[in-house]
Picture 1 (cartoon, helix red, strand yellow):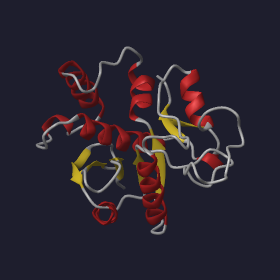
Picture 2 (cartoon, helix red, strand yellow; picture 1 turned 135 degrees about the vertical axis):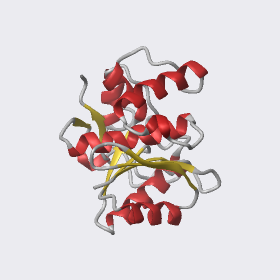
Picture 3 (cartoon, helix red, strand yellow; picture 1 turned 120 degrees about the vertical axis):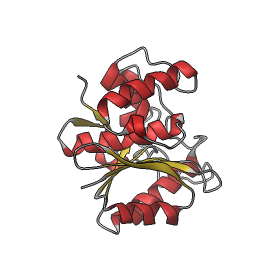
Picture 4 (tube, helix red, strand yellow; picture 1 turned 90 degrees about the vertical axis):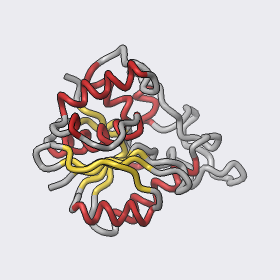
Amino acid sequence: MTYSGLDLTTSERRPSAYAALGSQGHLEECGTLRSDQDILRRVLESGSTLVAMDCPLGFPLGLCCLEEECSCIPASSLKGRECERELARRGVPCYFTTKRSIIKDMVYRGMALRDALAGHGIEVLEVYPYAAKVALWRKPIPLKTTPQGMAFLRGRLGQLVPGLLSCREKPTHDLYDAILASYTAYLHSQGKTESLGVEEEAMIVVPRAG
């Protein structure tokens, strides 16, 4: 059994970070993939039946798309999806999925990848690495783009994911987010996560707080 994690980019012009954990939660592979076909092929080759993707995978109820010229309107007067509002209530900031989202292309890409993977019988989870960090380690979490943040992630993830410290891939915060996504998928298989929001909008899966 393998658990894959993907830190998806907006388009194929920039590579997406990818990681895979084995059945005991050890790091089997990490690196980058560029095209959707590369991602699909690698997941299938890995034998993963569960993929965690750092990307919104649904629209707010009432919306059929994120295009401002479309006549669809959200069912709620509140901003975003219920899972995003729940994160906000917990003090975890995130992008809200709206027609003014700056990552709408990523949302479309993620949903298309989810559907392609589902066509091969692979379950896809929406995850949010920052929410996972808060659940696992509580605040404060150093900014991931700083040397302190990178050292924090390497040290904390190294305690959770066997094999991470010996990984030869150049460490980046995107790579660590992909590893954290795959770790969340691994925890999900153990019944150690919770799902926020409603299924119709796509739920965000986070580790159960320790």
